[in-house]
Amino acid sequence: MNFTGLTGQIQFDSEKNLILPAFDILNIGGNGSQRIGYWSNYSGLSVIAPEILYMRSPNTSISNQHLDNVIWPGETTKQPRGWVFPNNGKPLRIVVPYRVSYLEYATKDKGPLGVKGYCIDVFEAAVKLLPYVVPHTYTLYGDGLRNPSYNNLVNDVAENKYDAAVGDIIIITNRTRIVDFTQPYMESGLVIVVPVKERKSSAWAFLRPFTVEMWCITGLFFLFVGVVVWIFEHRMNDEFRGPPSQQVTTIFWFSFSTMFFAHRESIVSTLGCLVLILWLFVVLIINSSYTASLTSILMVQQLTSNIKGIDSLITSTNSIGEEYVDALHKGPKAGGVAAIVDELPYIELLLYKTNCKFRTVGQEFTKSGWGFAFQRDSPLVVDLSTAILRLSESGDLQRIHDRWISLDRCSAQVNQADQNVLFTPEDEEQDMDEPESIRPKSTSRMTSFTGFVDKKEHEVMESIKRKSDSKQQASQHSHG
Image 1 (cartoon, rainbow, N blue to C red):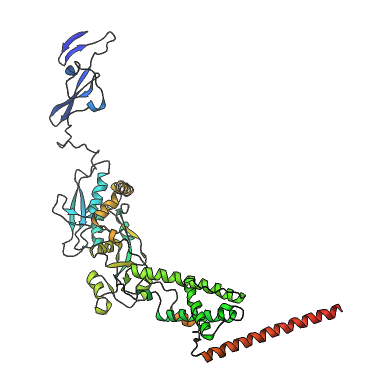
Image 2 (tube, one colour; image 1 turned 90 degrees about the vertical axis):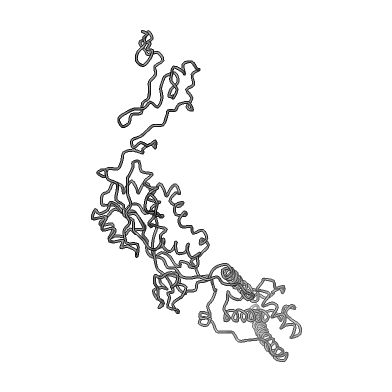
């Protein structure tokens, strides 16, 4: 069969299959239609009429398969994501707290949305991940002169004055009883922030790791150990003998050379070796503590407050408050405060704005988070929670955070005090008596002291010899 119809030539083969079938592809919208291309089994999708392509060699590559732009409902060329979230044909009424501080999280804007901030960007990014369109409008809550009441804001959502609330809204138990919250998109919790200052280095910085009392006690112990080793060694070790002045020099040299493990005198007595081993172990601990403390002092900032966490804050008599920067700079003695307690996100923004002049101490003593509040049983809660998790897993949530608040320059801060002292003077006074000074004042005193030691050692040796002789005689009598 072969004839010409309204759509052109129509021809069938012997098996009644249409030869060179071709179709027009129409885009129907409103009251009319528009052709956006053709399809045929010879060339596939194309914007060129099949009759023209029949005269060319067939080319069905993917790069040639295209149509003109499709006009979607709403006279737009943007492809819709799916069905529209049903809300009786009305956009969602989303309320945003009109803050007067920490505007980086949510505030008024002259743009199309009317609001801007970190919380707004997170919500918009999560909505774009939904498989359907959610028309919504933003309404500011508050007069812009002071921060609004967040409890009243949540109550208005529960009472159907608004469909949802987007902002720095903390998820707490009382609020979860009247509204549903999404997955938290920002961790929060109460933290303590105190001022810090840079410690200027000086020529005497190497003395800071230990107190004056600690330096004195350490020096006395060095001398004490040197004298004890000399007592055990000078009768049998030639390196510890000689004129009194040489022996005094040997004691001082041996004592302080152990600080660097550089003593050159050999130890031959058993008791001397035992004392030296124990002392070298103590010296190792002292050196390690000194090195760590000196490094911390030279590199780390110093707290200007004695508050180290929630326990010290409770026991402190200093004031704490909320007029952040000015109050912290003044300090408790000038009518300010010693520390500030607030939510972690606000403190992060404070550190960012003040160029890290303050520092958090201790750990968070409460745990919570920020979430988007919806009316009870809203189907958007589950879908938006899933979208927030996707943002977190892909890293987009962190990138949005860094776009508004970047804390890279504060990352080197630590939460411990910068001075680490091995011993405290109070502990030393309680645990040990200060050794008497044995530094010789004259050669005659040194001579009398060495004579006394020699006499005692001689008496001990004679006593041991007599006991040994008596045992031998008793043994001979028994054999006889």
